[in-house]
Length: 631
Image (cartoon, rainbow, N blue to C red; front, side, top):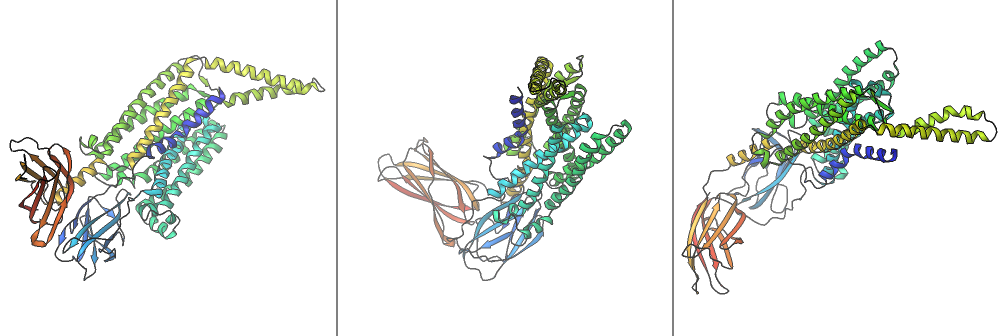
C-alpha cells in the first residue's frame, strides 16, 4: 500500500505543472491586451504625397521606446528617424525622411501594453500607387516562439510556487501547528518557495527578449536586463525577490525556532509575530502581480488591485492548504481531526472571498454578457466557473467526512505510508538490546525476528486503520479535490495571459469609430453570353465598400430569379482617374450561383469601374461592368 500511495501523491503534487503544460502545449502565443485602432495614413491607403510622419493609435496606454515603430520602403530600407513621439490620447508617431519614392511602404510596430504583454503588428500604405515590396515579415507574434514558451512556463511555476509556499505556511500556522515539525510538510512549503524564487529569476532574465526580439541569445543580454529593471514589470519582479528573501527568514523561524519552542506563552507570542510577518510577505507577493498585470490597467484600478490581492491570497489559502492537508494525510504519522476541521473553516472562508472578488473581476474584465460567449476570455471563465463548481462539490464531501471524523471517539487521524515502516524499525530497535542478551550468534537472528514481529504488528494496525471508511473517505475526497484544484489553477493562469473581453470589445468599437461610415455597395448587371441558356443577372455586393478590406459576394441568377449554376465568375476593379488597376479578384464558389471573396483591398476612395466576367459554358462568356463610388 505504501508503494502505491507515495507515487500517487507525488504525481498529484506535480499536477500543477503537468496540467498547465498540457493545456498550453497547443495554445497560441499570448494574446495582446492593447489593439491598434487607427493610423495615419490608414492601412491600405494610397496617398498623393509621402507623409512627413506615421502615427499609430492604440486602444489603451502602451509603453514604447525609440525603434518601436519602423517604416520600410518598397526595397526594405528603413526610412524613419527611429525616434518616437507621444502625441497624447494613446497615439504615437515617428517622423519620416524627405524625398521618399512612390510605392508601397510597410509599417511595423512592437510595444508593451499597460498590463505588461507585448503587442506587435504590421500594415502597408502606398505613395502614388501600389507597388511590389521586398519586405518579408516574420510569422512569429510578440511573446511567441521558444522565449515566449519559456516565459509562460516560468509564470505558471510562479503561481504554483506562490500557492504552495503561502498556502502551506498558512495551513501550519492557522490549522496544524504541530505540522511545523513534520518533514513532508516542511518540504512542501520550502519547495513552493524555491519554485517561486527560481521562476521569478527566470522571468526577470527572459523579460527583455520576451518583450523585444524574442531571440534566445538575448536572454542573458545585460543591457536588456538593465532596461527591464526600469519598467513596471521589472520593478515588480525585483520587489518579489526582496519579499522572497524575507520569506526565507519566515521559513527558517517557522520550521526552526517555532517548532522547538516548548513554553506555551513563548509559542503564542511567536505565533502572533509569524502571523503578522507572514501576512505582510504574502500580501506583498500577491501585490507584485496586481501592480503589473490585468488589475493595473483598465477601469477602477484603485479598487481592482486590492481586490486582486485578496483573490490571490484566497486562492493560496484554499489550494495551498489543500495540498498541505493532502501531504499530511498521506505522509505524516498522524494529524488531529481538529486540524482538518479548522482547515475546513478556512477553506469555506476562502471560497466566500473568491466568490465575491471573482464576481467583481468578471464584471470588470468582461464588460457585457455577450463577451462571456463571444471572447476567449469569457469562454475560459465559463470553464473555470464550471471547475470551481465541481471543486466546491468535492469540498462539501470532504466537509462531510470531516464532520463524521470529528464526532468519532478517536480524535487523531493516523496515516499510512513510509512512516509505518519507520515505526516498525523503531519497534525493532527497541527490542534489539533484549535480543542481544541472548548472546553469541543468535543475537542477529533474534534482532531480525524482532523486526519482523514489529512489522507484522504495524501492518495489522494499519489494516485496522484503513478499514475505517471515515478516514479512507476523507483521503479519497481530498485527493479528488486537489486534482480538480490543480486544473483550476492551470485555467486561472491561462486567464491572466488572455485578452479580457472588455478590452476586445472596446478595441472593436474604437476601430469601428475610426473608420468612416459607408453603406454596403450592391450592383445588378444583366448579362447574355450569346449561347443557349446564356442570359441572367449578376448581383455584386461589397461590404463595407470603403478603403481597406472588404467582403465581396456575387450572386448569379436566371431571369426568373433562380440560382444559375455556372462554371466561373471573375471580377476586376479599376480606378481610371488614378491609373490604378485592373485589380483582379477571383471569388470562390460556395453554393449554386453564389461566389464570395474576403479581404478584397480597396486602396483609395474614388469612382471605381467594377467589371464582372461570367462564363456559362466552355466557350460562352461575357464581361459586364458598372461604375460605383467607393469610400
